[in-house]
Image 1 (cartoon, helix red, strand yellow):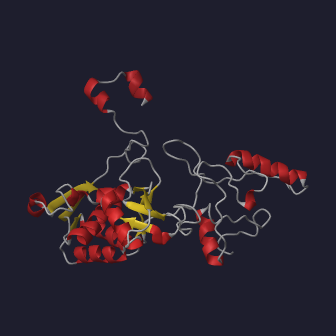
Image 2: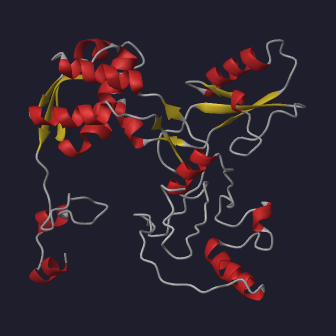
Image 3: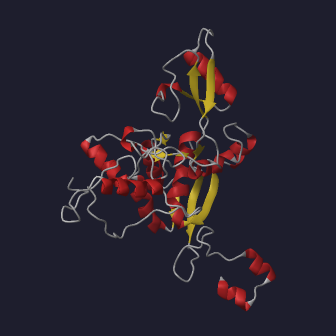
Amino acid sequence: DAELVDMTFGTGAVKITPAHDPNDFQTGKRHNLDFINIYTDDGKLSSHPANAGFKGQRRFEARVSVVKALEEKGLFRGKKDNAMKIPICSRSKDVIEPLLKPQWWVSCKEMADNACKAVRSGELEILPKSFETTWFRWLENIRDWCISRQLWWGHRIPAYYVSIEGDDNSGKPGAPSENLERWVCGRTPEDAERRAQQKFNPRGDKKITLVQDDDVLDTWFSSGLFPFSVFGWPNQTQDLEKFYPTAMLETGHDILFFWVARMVMMGMKLTGKIPFKQIYLHAMVRDAHGRKMSKSLGNVVDPLHVIEGISLEGLHET
């Protein structure tokens, strides 16, 4: 694969794990390779035949075991240090292991086109005007949006997997046996139950079970609903009729696409109206190193220090 492999580097050969590396994923698509997940959800090597002899080991333990197995077979040729980028979780500081997981997606092409038209027609104004270039660059090159997250916090996705008693084709959500036709959505569990009965049990002679997806919605999806959900949408309330759309949104330019564009796309799609007439983008407050001030980075001003003051020694430590 000329796009991935440098024949002059090392042995000239490279491992390909399409299910565990973004670059390998693209290579697997180019060459129609199998996408094999070798891990369980708790980070251990699975029962897949590729893990023969290493099943149940944690990833870092398995690395040592694999080297030892190669040495025992006389196949180990040595190892060298190689500088590389390792993704680290900002919260736990653990090494991130890419995995393939079934996800929920939103097609954005039509919504993005409408958001571009709103700016070009003057229906929606971006200030400063120079940021229109950023707006068009993002939206004219938009891809499908993965809106599901495997987290413990957030709005739980209102999708339910339907199992039918005695039906061998029910499968299991998230497993290789998952049947994509068995998903139904509903605003409430009762709504989902009604839809499942209509679709899979119209005569009422079968026992069906619904299990809600454990995934939650992407934060930007939930916050994209903000301009109209605060007024009671999807109900047609007096507040929604009186106050939506609003006049101006004022925010930082760093989230013009991640939040602002999502609000515009979703507002136009779900209500038929742009959520605001103007977008005013302010400058960013940065630290001494030019970085955005962020709680995650830990480079923000502690409000308690502003209220109560701080000693010179404490100031030096911040």
